[in-house]
Image (cartoon, rainbow, N blue to C red; front, side, top):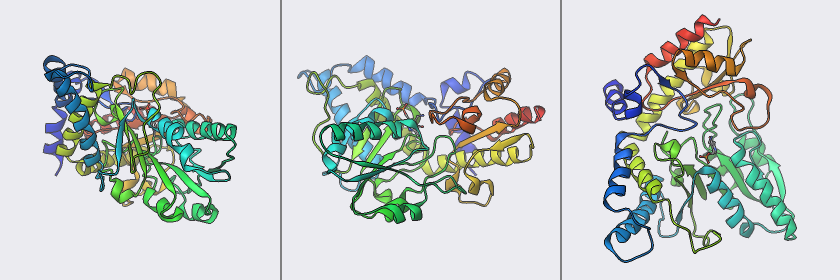
Amino acid sequence: DLVPWQRALRAEFPIITAHPELVYLDSAATAQKPRAVLDAVQTYLTTANANAGRGTYPWANASTELVEGARARIGAFLSDPAPERSAVHFTSGTTEGLRTVARDWLPGLLDDGDEIVVPFADHQANLVPWLEARELLAARGKRITVREMPYQASSGDYDPAALAASAGPRTRFVALTHVHHVYGADMNVRRVREAVGPDAVICLDAAQSVGHLPVSVAALDVDFVAFSGHKALALPGSGAVWARQRRGPRFVPGGWSGTPNTTGIVSLTAALDWLRAAGEERIERWTTALALRLTDGLRQLAAYRVLGCQRSLALDSDIQHRCGIVTFRHRSIGASDLGFILFSHGFMVRTDDHCQGDGGEKSSSVRVSVHVYNTPEEIDRLLDVLATLE
Ligand code: PMP
């Protein structure tokens, strides 16, 4: 029974407890912060704030240690099996992490005539950098083929069999998303590794998985992982990219590395510690149950259609396949009108094109995304309001 566990954790989010009349259902956009994260930032700024990596006085040393210690914490959080060979680079979030892989490391991994496979139906942050890299490489005389990742129509995740059929020895690099930000689907990363073999380099967009479910680079067998701190209960502007192998420094023009986002990094360490103590498996069970409750409720209402991820529509389906995100449409009410109506009842949801840029049905849909602070009662109240619009 997770109810007492959840009740205690919910009480640790000041913005949630301060607004009992509001229901925050947009955690896939950015998550709320537990008191431990806010306290860690305040403690740092009031006891040791200094520029890390510079200076020899105690505050500067403490700042340097916090930054270096955070790298080890992130590696451990991701179950890095060989930290002596890997590297953790701090970024402002997933977008910058993926761009870093594309700009600083991908060119060195590819030869003329190689092929990369990228997702065309995921977040744009996991598409545009790879297309740009192709142009950059072409300008340097390396022609790279970009192939579209195949998807399974029935479940919304990737299609490893179709990928295996189209991949060849020149398939050197595959960009994947761990959890889809519109469908909440677990994209089946492990089976993609089996499809492309051990030599391909896999880069994972973990924006919607780190902080929501256990993410193990050892279990997933991936080479790069990019994630955002702000979606994992830390401050915006924090994040990291983990690399299985050290690949030389990132290119940061002007100064050897720039001043690190020390408060962001402090918040990230505190958030990962908080998540580990709370238990990511339990968080996943809780948010999946809420998402299934909403999905099930929507199925009783004829005016609504849940997008994607068909397999999880059955309640006995693989629980991995609905990671706290449910996107749906109303038969006749547009998404932004629905968003306004819902906010008049206190519900905050996402209503736009969900950064996919391909228009179509997703662009007029409403996304509900939950975290550990949300409750079944909130989902039931949302369903009650949605039912009045039938
Ligand atoms: N990838 C996915 C799957 C996302 O959901 C998001 C955020 N919506 C991003 C990348 C980009 O993250 P950020 O804005 O934190 O860089």
